[in-house]
Length: 69
Image (cartoon, rainbow, N blue to C red):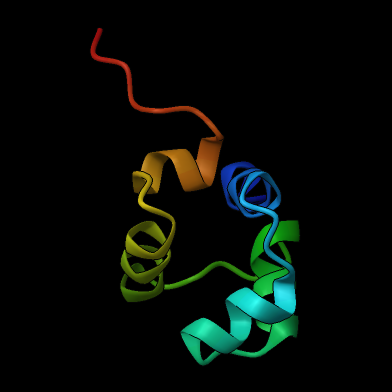
């Protein structure tokens, strides 16, 4: 599954994949795989990414904030 919001928020903040990867102590390749759906981050990594970008996990995955129905 592509993590639409992850790539979107990274680009909005003007961060390179390398910067984010270095800040989070992961490889640039791993971040690229997350963004392009080649690999899915575990729950712990989702929380780390969510905190890093200050967005919800739902946003990281869908590119939209959760909307109560």
